[in-house]
Length: 115
Length: 115
Image (cartoon, rainbow over all chains, first blue to last red):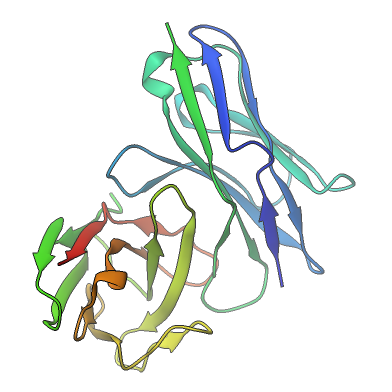
């Protein structure tokens, strides 16, 4: 079974500063990794995903994440944040088995951007 | 493309009544649909996975007689919360994918309040 740990429940950052949201996973098999963003009272929107290939993945809204297999991490970064990035961010993992792709989510990190 | 809708977005009901939530994939045929539940300030918990024309697969601890899932077509799945009680109040989110190993696309969610 997989599990995901997001190490920070809340991250306050000033506008235009860089940010890193941390995610570690545990799995006995190879996995796919995802970052989703959730704005208040809305569903989830995919930011980026790692399936295979380059360990540095670029997503929407200027976000990127790096897959580190040895450290079982998939941290999300953005070099300069904007007020509109204020949201809840979820890291998720899915195994590479056939069939329906069940997602296991981390606890979420609330990113607050201060002016 | 890949839009998933949910209806209603908000529902308030009396204890003991049943509530039906619809999840539709608007511009693609969904091989699999997923239902999640999210409590305030918490992560998403997978409730069940459904495929068109077959019975849903429920996660451990989810009462299948309480949460009835019907996947009548490749674009529609419904979740019925039967005999709802205040503890069923939550944010329910569905997602859909195009096939195995495909990205899940999430609906905007339905907030249920049981009085």
